[in-house]
Length: 122
View 1 (cartoon, rainbow, N blue to C red):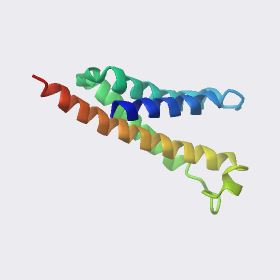
View 2: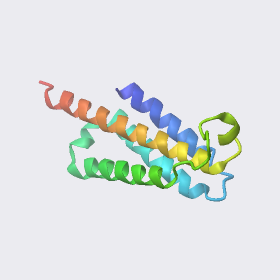
View 3: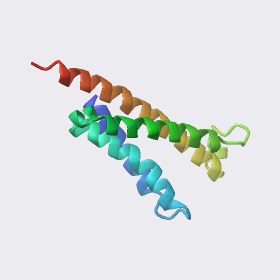
């Protein structure tokens, strides 16, 4: 799970990095940066998730990301085809938030598994 979290952190950091020339790039860097940070914490310091504050932050992040995904859901027909998402920025933004939700849910599952493993360590 730690390796998976590390790969997800790298993916989200890559997503954030390619936002540098976007007019609203700072907003998207934050949207992608928070899951990257949470994944790195899960990878290198999973014991930190023993704190209710960090678990709450993760849950709030998931809820906000789901709300954002609903708000930015692509309105174009066949938005999943390359011809559409290559040209339509709103389709790419919606898909980016879908990926963000999936990453956050994986982090949630990973931190639960790692916390259980840490609490049963003799």
